[in-house]
Image (tube, rainbow, N blue to C red; front, side, top):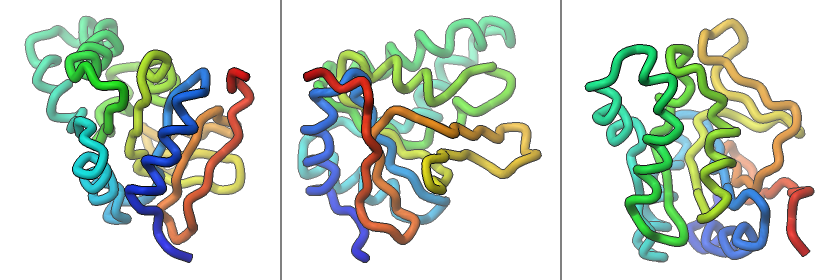
Length: 169
């Protein structure tokens, strides 16, 4: 099977624009081509590509430990809103999984994808209907047995999308 292309991702963004959560996850392990796909899509569609770890960690530096957990959601939202684009590509979001920030990364991304299309690289895997990040026992491990979002897998499968029961229509 062929790997998804920027054209596949752009087409999926058109579908996402009609959904309640306008979130698309590009899922795959490290070095599977997620960043390369987002860079190609940014070049083709003219959408901004944000290195979330870099941008948000710079904003968190001046905050106390407690303030970080309380404000990270707003800070991520401000970074995305600063682009003023209808669609934004987000890479390097591992910071959101930090136990110190006490966030649910998928829910945070879904909330931010209400008013704009968000395409985010997800360094993990999809097995059946289950989305994961890290390995069981790891402090950042996350498992979502059911998740309502569109996705592309870069783990040796063709472009795939999950149904979204929140679709308007």
